[in-house]
Length: 180
Image 1 (cartoon, rainbow, N blue to C red):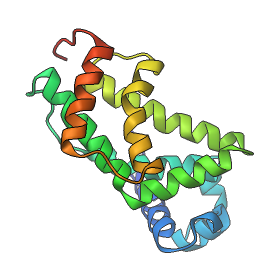
Image 2: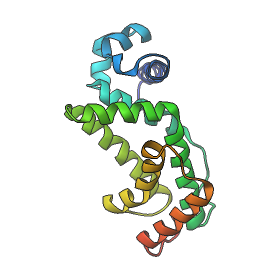
Image 3: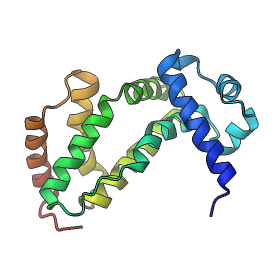
């Protein structure tokens, strides 16, 4: 079991990072500014995350790790629809939009940002597989891509009817989905 003090420190730093990303200029957030705001050492931040991009990736997914939504009692189609709606809602979170925009912009020049985006995608795919079905990377991209496009390119998140249509498409991509 992890040391509770370490877990409290990590939780505190991630909460401070989320606040800083939404309340100030997110591009200006560095380990130095975050360490000062969270009242921890820069060494602590480097030890736990290694780069600001990794910390941002974890801060974005941090809130969603505690979801208590019970999807197991639903049919595969209902689980898929519920998960797509949750993903749409997550993408609608202003913090998520800020973090994605920042990481995408940094990914042009910084390999750490590319890795952070991969971590977010891997966690999303793992959650999808846990609740719906096993998918290849390409299948996951085909299913989640329209949500990403609607939220961040078109700036018009999919409606519930759009989610239902996407779920129908996804079932075609996945083929027969058995209960998890």
